[in-house]
Image 1 (cartoon, rainbow, N blue to C red):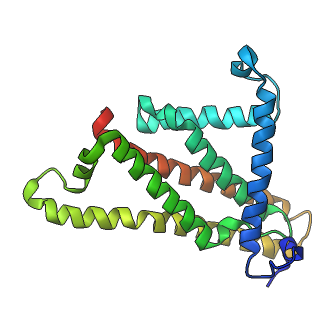
Image 2 (image 1 turned 90 degrees about the horizontal axis):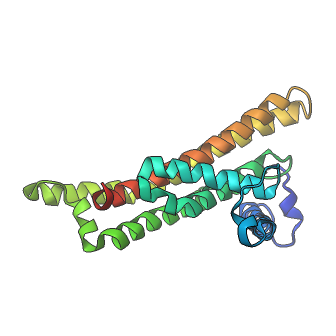
Image 3 (image 1 turned 180 degrees about the vertical axis):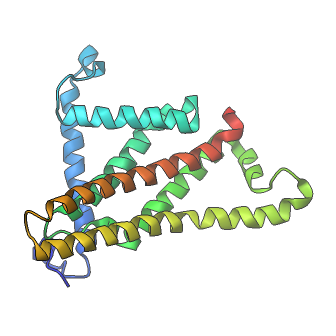
Length: 229
């Protein structure tokens, strides 16, 4: 069992390091978000993009990029979900990046955490589907042919129910593997040769946050397809 800085917090121990990490990252992101919001200013200044590298600029870049991607995946109404998807991407990314810090374990290495993320995504796209399509959204589960409806209902229910599981397993397994590889090389080479693995870890953390966000977009697109296409 590797040492983790969160174990210095009373009551954390080895069993609650992921919970402590998630809590710490949540607090940091709230503080960064408050600072970014304050840096927007008021009036016309708030809607003019910044032209310099800053916390505000990073958040604007994330939101603008994710908003454009959501519009491509979901349709013209996808940009309305930009704050939601940008929040998912940022939250998962920061939780992933914690694992790059020596002596820290990413919360996303724990399946309980990633499964909770998957459940949240599952609830979100179903709520959006019901809100936009009403009871007509349930037709998604019955298929195009009425006499195949019972079979399609069973298939669709299974397909939807396992989505939180697959989202959670994919993220947790990849982050566990990435963190394990990085830890092994840090034990062998604390500096120097370990630098490429830091860069690889950074890339993996970003890609996994992107994949989770992109799949969430696809689920929202499928849930709202009949209403906008």
